[in-house]
Image (cartoon, rainbow, N blue to C red):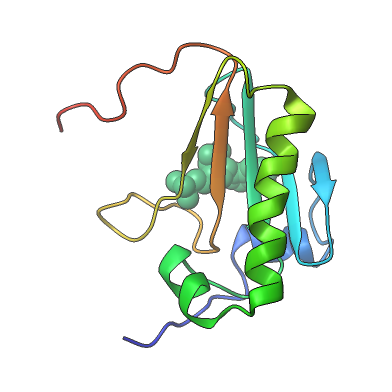
Length: 122
Ligand code: AMP
């Protein structure tokens, strides 16, 4: 499958500085910022700076430097937020069944309260 990236998605606008964000961490290839509608006391979005639609797109086409940077950025966010002890959840929604709202690859870092079971029945 070929991936088509929409330059007008909201995270692309954040990366271009066209709309503000509440930055938690910026690295060479990644940006982490607080979710605008937090669903837990800690709700951070970590995104690669490159134009990737989804996790599988990123895994297929990103460079090793980007993948390493992104993986380490998530770990750094967990340490910055002090969530290792209490625990946390990482989620990356993709496509229609994943109910992805923003078509720029992102990982949600959720923590700060018991998060319940991973999935509810539809
Ligand atoms: P997803 O359903 O995985 O695509 O999640 C997209 C997430 O982006 C949601 O949790 C939104 O609350 C969040 N979001 C949308 N717009 C913004 C924004 N401008 N700044 C921060 N988070 C946003």
